[in-house]
Amino acid sequence: MDNNVNHSTAGVPRPGQAGSRPPASTQRVSGPEVETRPYDFEHPVPLRAQQLDALRLATAGACDSLQRALTQLLRHPVGIEFLSVEQSTYRDYLTASDEPTCLGVFAPADSTEVWLLDTNRCLAFTMIDCLLGGVVSGVTLSRPFTAVETHVIQKALSTILRELTADFLPTAPLPMTRLISDGSLIAEAGSNAAVALVSLEVVIGPSRGLVQLCVPWKRVPHVSVLLQETERGSNERMRVAAGKVRVQVSARLAQLKLSTRDVANLCAGDLLLTDNPVTGEISLMIDEHELFRGTTGQSHNRRSLVITTSVGTTRGVRTPPEGT
Image (cartoon, rainbow, N blue to C red; front, side):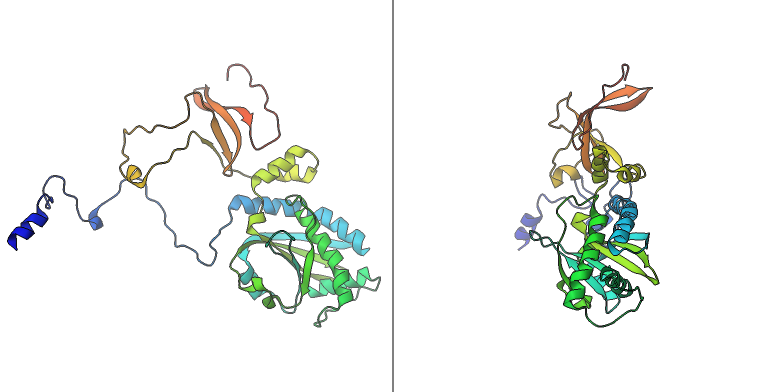
């Protein structure tokens, strides 16, 4: 038995011998400390601050056109004030929403994405009164909507959705599939899928209330969408909005793949070889989207980047001045 023990431990360095490692609990990794945060299972797909900023500017800029469109449709003065854009989920929002409500469900025919447009019931019945040519009473009714009322209010809800999404959803208008009074009855009431919640306050005569839009997280625009809309030159408010967005700009020198073992063994002085040639271009990233390519240079004793190619935009590249 002793021979077996000696044979099994032969060649294994003991503590204190050359080549031995301390226990895993005592190993220390050099380098900057990395902040760790617990994983949020309730909101597994966080939206980036730049996306919320882009949606905030797009929808806030659309309030004026929405106000004009609703005033023309209802033939009654309408006031709209933009309130906020925040991240939520279908379940969180529908659980906290008022009941009964006026919830329009919009869904494209070729997709499973669901857009929810929630309107204060007092506002909804006021819109119906205006569309039917009646007197604005400001009365709130708790009964379900009739077939005629559903058909009439669909015009107003479709107008609201069209105007709010015109700048970042350049597709055919989304059809309204249902109008419901109890949000807990739809399948999305139990979904943890992330949404961006856009909140507006609308005033029509004596009626005042919230209009809230749930935008599926995949449809929340990136800053690059604002930039592309700006270049088209047809949307003045998008040009103003895009100029106020703060973006993170980075230059990507190269990309390469390393195994976990290679990364663990990296240390100062190691040389990493890439597939990019010495004269290859560098990618200019804005909000993690490649918009330009260029080459490195020097200007006033500082590193610089000369843009040579436009990738994600339609804008032409000007000839750089001499000496850069």
